[in-house]
Amino acid sequence: MWEDIDVDTKLAVFALGGINEIGKNMYVIQYANDIVVIDCGSKFPDENLLGVDLIIQDISYLKEHRENVRALIVTHGHEDHIGGIPYFLKQLNVPVYATRLTLGLIQLRLKEHGLLRETELILINGDSTVDLGSISATFFKTNHSIPDCLGIAFETPEGTVVHTGDFKFDLTPVNDEYADLHKMAEIGKKGVLLLLSESTNAERPGFSQSERVVGGHIADAFRKAEGKIFISTFASNVHRVQQIIEAAHMTNRKIALLGRSMVNVVSVAEELGYLKIPEGMLIEPQEVDQMDPENVAIICTGSQGEPMAALSRLSSNNFRQVSVLPGDTVIFASSPIPGNEKSVSRIIDNLYRLGAKVIYGTGGATGMHVSGHAYREELKLMLSLMKPTYFIPIHGEYRMLELHREMAESIGVESENVFILNNGDVVDIQNGIARQTRHVEAGNVFVDGLGIGDVGRVVLRDRKLLSEEGMLIIIVSMSKADGRIISDPDTISRGFVYERDANELYKEVNQLVISTIKDAKPSTRYRQNDLKHAIRKSVEKLLYTRTRRKPMILPFIIEI
Image (cartoon, rainbow, N blue to C red; front, side, top):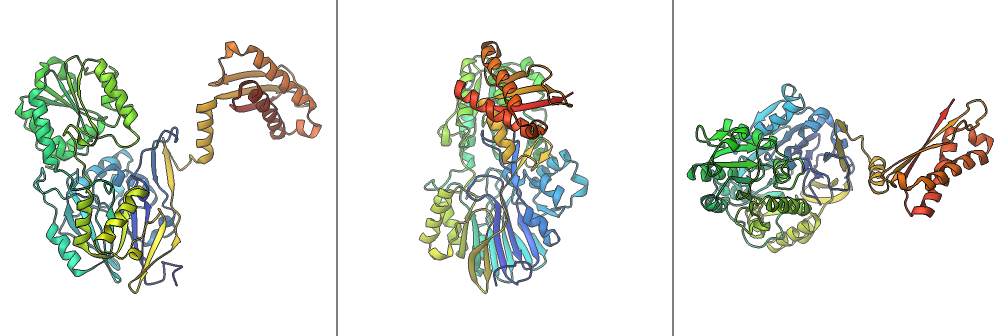
């Protein structure tokens, strides 16, 4: 009865990304033969994924059922919700529904990938209704750290499924666009079968602070600052950028933008009316050093310690057009994402060495940052407004999901009606009864340069080995006719030992290679793969005995 969601008239809900992790969000709702996808984000790799640029979702299930995928609906414009869209559309060209600013940011990425003309982009807002076969979607406005965010209510034959998107309850939003509490309450009053709600700040008690609070601290810092001001924040935090612009205008400072993503987002946001910049206020980076330091503020990327971002290059005195000088003020208007603390600390140290005054702190300790995600009491408020029968906490690591489960139970959701899932776990609902008994394929796909999915565990294992132990290349010239060694082996190493100090070791390796070839059976000697394997094994054993290291050993046999 629960095996095939293609033919049965039942509701299925699952995630292909975003559960037990922060990033690469993608959620799927299916009723019979109609599939709707929510968000398509990316995630940045950790230091173990050497050379990988991005991590995106495995969409094998969606490709297998491509004729049933009706739409991709995007809740807002952050990278962890839109970063995977170009790669998704290259495999599944479906209509994309999003708000004005979100569509503007999506268009930037589609242009880079040459997909803009081929993609159907459809504008929605808080009052829109979208019919997608047996599923229809309505929307409600939410607050977050980027404008134009929506939650979604899906009407299905089984009942209403609500996806909150990323949200907080900001009662004094910078753009005066308030969360639609009345609509949320109406949805809850009509009855919500299943709620999917984000869990990012499930560990933080109380209520989050308003973004407007940050504006006051930024303005105060601008009034006190001497020299140039460098302020780093997420490019997509348009509300914060607006408050920086207002503080600069108040203190008679011109604004320069550093970093490609900052320039792109500000350009799109201003063009669409989400940013208001006084005429003549923006200057080019090359103009900064021509002006009095007290009359300039620079908004830059790199608040998370990214090595190639503007702030990192400024801190190492490696930005050609602008320099940080003694007496300048550098403000981190953000909080380090877990895992980025070391990179951020390194940049702060470098800035102090340059003589700058640095304002930084975690968790908004300086007042320069507040979270865009709901704290515990706000998560409870959303649960209370929606009053769901079933609940799936999403968008968080496992401990966050578990804490969110406890909150749901505290406001009256039955414990057996809360599902803590992994990516790919399917919750099936039929005749009002929900069960989790099956799994669809889900996982990580690595983007490396132009390659998508061509870097797997074997390649990453080799990269890790090369980075930790180095490599040894052994080149042997042999007679094709009789398998005789024509000249002594040539040994080359990289990242293993310093060659000038290893002459005796290399002589020993070369002698071992010669003896291994001579001792090989005739059948082995004439089969290159077998001979390479024998050389690799014997040299590996010698090197470990002599150095306690296991470099990658690459024998090359040249037949002449």
